[in-house]
Structure formats: structure tokens, C-alpha cells
Image (cartoon, rainbow, N blue to C red; front, side):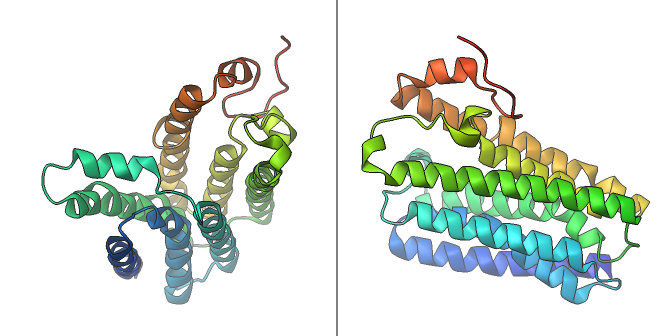
Length: 255
């Protein structure tokens, strides 16, 4: 049943990304794939919850809430802005059809990663629930991460919407304690979801899923690319980086 769940989830993700790809080709820009990232996890959670032999409603609902919020946030953030330069650069490097190149390098890769990271959510639908104490810890870790990234995104959005802050760097609120509240929050969310899947050895064996998500945020397409762009475009970013933690929230260093 789990293998069938995995196959149906893969099919659902393929349909979602296929629709997003078709829309993106028609629009001539591909940053809609960023919106599909969170929504893809919500789709997998919904499919797994519906098919589960022992439906784990809590882990499914928490995944759906996280994925839908992230998708909406990114969609609103990107509205009215130019296409993400990452996708423009990928198309320019393509030796053949640029859209086909993006389909292989971005869409297919993202689909595979999405399915792998979501393994705890899928496995939890076919195994026993964790003990109450572990469920409470997992839910609290998820809540801390969800709150951290949601508040961080809201603070940054509010800061940017104020004309008085044009040209300024966000260094207050949660951004005073970490340069990436949103990435730290994402990592905590998936650590919490992993704990909710640890009611069996099969669930515990999916530990590489949150590890991969955290690695992507800290060393893959998250923090490194963001900081590379910020250091090039903002001369005051280096001083901010010197006194502010790069990931885990910590009190700022003294000058």
C-alpha cells in the first residue's frame, strides 16, 4: 500500500508540475515553480491522508497548512515583479531548447526532491502513531518553525511595503537574530514533521528527508544563493552578516 501511495503521489506531483510548466511556457517566465514547491507538499499530504491505512491526520494537516501558506506567500511576493534571475540564467545557459532544459534541470529535479522530503508524511499514514510525548514534541517543533518563518516573512513584507525603508536593509525583529528566519523556520517545520512520523522504525528511517531539506536551505539553493545576491547588491550586507547568525537564531554579536 505504501508503494502504491508513493506511485500515486508521484503521479499527482507530475500533474501539478506539468500544469505549472505549461502555464509558465505560455507566460514566458518560470518562477511559478516556486509557488508549486509548497503546494506540491500539500498535494502529497492530501493524497497520502486519503489513501492511508492508518490515517495520520495531524501530520497531514500540518503539512497542508505549511505548504499552502508558503505557496500563497511566494505567489503574493512575486506578483508584479520581474522573473527570478535564476531561471533567466538557466535558460541562457541552455544549449538546446531552453524550456526543455528547465523541465529537466528544475521541474524534474524539484519533483524528485519533493517526493523524497515528503517521505515522513507518506510513511506516517501506514505506521503506528508515535507516543503522546513524542507527538507533543513534534507538534511544538513544527509550531515553532511555522511561527518563526511566518512572522519573519510578515516582518520583511511589512518592512518593504513602507516607502521610508526603500534602499534599507531589514535588520530588526527576527532578522536581528538570524539572517534567514524563513529558512530556519522551514528546517524546524520538517524536523517536527519527522518526529510525528517516528511511531515506527520505518518512520524513523526517513531521517534523511529532513536532513536533505535542511541541507538545501543551508548549503543548496537557499541561503548560499540569497547571500550571494545580497552581498553583490547591498554594500551594507557584509556588516550585517558579521554580527548576525547565519541560520540558527542567536543574539547578535557586539560591534
